[in-house]
Image (cartoon, rainbow, N blue to C red):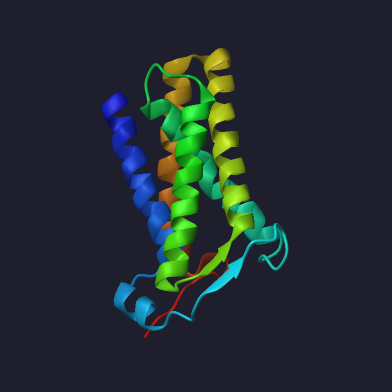
Length: 166
């Protein structure tokens, strides 16, 4: 299961990259050509996209934090996984600024790290309730469901979230 969990972690990392940097665009060249420019917000919760965006940032990183725990094997301390999640989030924000493909916002970093912390906590708590293998299986399934759900929503227009590029 450890190899499979690492594979799902890599897939989820690629999914986060597609989500954060490319906004789930099916046509990356068109997306890059239409990039609107860059913005930088270093004041927490000022000028962010509102409660919906904050909630989505948290939710997007829950499986990532959980998959980090599952993939790192015997290490059940939350600090290393949380540090990896924080570095990942800061890296995405820096890349958005460098390539002018989104708003660089400290709120995003904070909410992404909160989501990862929740994912880490869910796995560690679940292990005590249902055992390590079951908790790992649940987090792997959650990661896969998030990826498939985002693809479905972005490509079919469910919830009015279809992204269209010429």
